[in-house]
Amino acid sequence: MRRLLMSAAMLGVLLAAGGGCAPPSGPKEIRVTANEKGFEPATLTVEKGRPAILIITRTSDATCATEAIFTETGRRYELPLNEEVRIDVPTDAATTLHYACGMNMYKGEIVVK
View 1: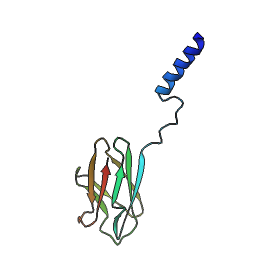
View 2: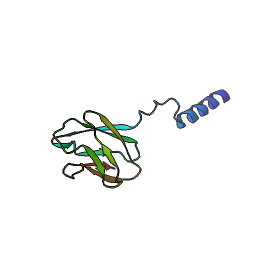
View 3: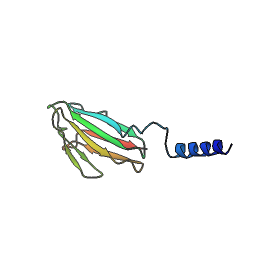
View 4: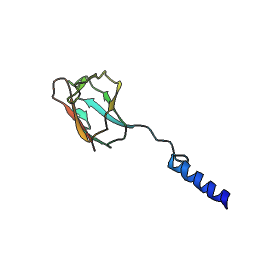
């Protein structure tokens, strides 16, 4: 009986520590295309506290969206044609992050909630 209780206690410790659970799947990847229509999709939603990576791919030369400038951080990302650009999205607080092309014609936003 004592051995059974100890085994049950050890199982509880392992489960509480995450043992026996599937490993986390990693950050959520959200994809956006920059083309002649702008950023598609223009609005994205991510979960607060869950790591996220924005992946922008420019697929057209017929656009001014050759870069993405984030309003809140001032960070600028060049968007080379047909290349994925990976951007870490801060998800530690509920907020809306805005970005736009260099001419501020095409805009996108990431809602963290």
